[in-house]
Amino acid sequence: MEALASNADDLLEDIERSEISHGRVLDTTLIVAETSCELDPDAEELESWEAWGTAMQRGSARFAMATAPEGSMVTCRIKEEEWQLPASGPQLRVYAGSPAFLAGQ
Image (cartoon, rainbow, N blue to C red):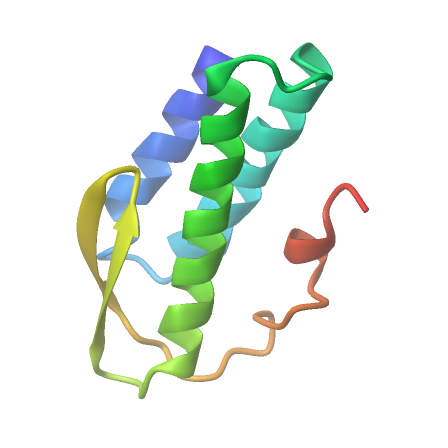
């Protein structure tokens, strides 16, 4: 679990520079959140709540980047830190029904 969370954090460091990391960050974060539910099915541990909160923040950031005009910057708060993320404009893979947003349903 620690390795997964660390990988998600490493990917987040690249989100300001690499468009490829945008989807990978969310996918990895959702895996961390889902794994936390396997280990803590009653969500009694703070880490479980934090994992889902972080997944929500990263998903929200992905939508914010896709809905802002391409070439602009979007300020998003993820894990108690402000990030300046490049807006991509509309993306085919960013929609409410995309597999990343439906994971676990």
